[in-house]
Amino acid sequence: MLVFPNAKLNLGLYITSLRPDGFRNLESVFVPLPWCDAFEVLPAPAGAETSLSFSGLPIPGEPETNLCRRAYELLAADFKLPPVQLHLHKDVPIGAGLGGGSSDAAFALKAINSQFKLELTPEKLESYARRLGSDCAFFIRNEPVFARSRGDMFDDFALDLRGTPALVVYPNLHISTAEAYARVVPRTPHHELRQSLQAPMFTWRETVSNDFEEALTPVYPVLAEVKAQLYAAGATYASLSGSGSAVYGLFPKLAEAPQLDWPAGYTVWSGKL
Image (cartoon, rainbow, N blue to C red; front, side, top):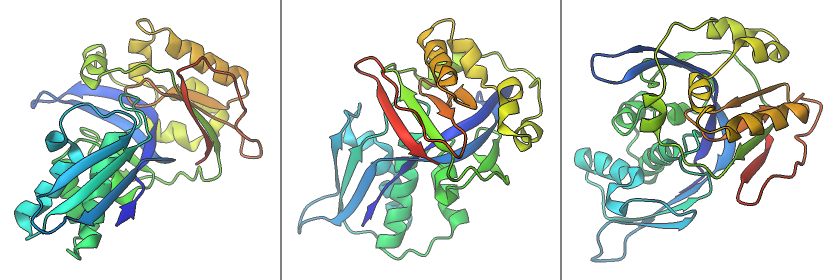
């Protein structure tokens, strides 16, 4: 079973309040981004135990603690699963605010569900995914949603960006989620996100923002530099995604994302949503 976990973009991201459990409430619209890893599930050789191997970009931590391995163990605790060989090829940068690790975990759940015919509904898969991470559940259905609470509760949101050219720039800068949240002070958003995103995209520059961008740019000015280059190249809207450090630009539908020169070490994805 071979699947291709895709990344996501955040259209706006507001940290609205502290929660009693120590997390923050947020508002954001998640949209799929077709920048993908690859994840494979194979039967383990006779007598072997379950294993997880990696290729592609370096992945920190031990395989036993990786979210893909934890996804298997969550399902194995409730179903009689045989040992498997799991392999993750990493292409989406880590610490970029693109949800790559969460997507890997969600796609692992979906792949194991299909491989062993567990017949778990999307709702049940989402309940498992929420146990792995706040935004993991988004990747079960993998369609635009208005995200709230910890980023794990979703409302349907009618927004069709299919075919929109996009350019995503990762400036080789890892920003930990803990650091990003520590720099943001919760507040009431200046604009209502759902209403703002229903307006034409050229208005988003004035009405749709990411609280992490405001908090992190003074510390990491490269974020503002990349955003300015995207606007100079003709982006209709540009923003930090998630807690960073990837910055994306969306371009007019009849155009193509431009080819720009970036410093050595930057990772760039170009394509259409």
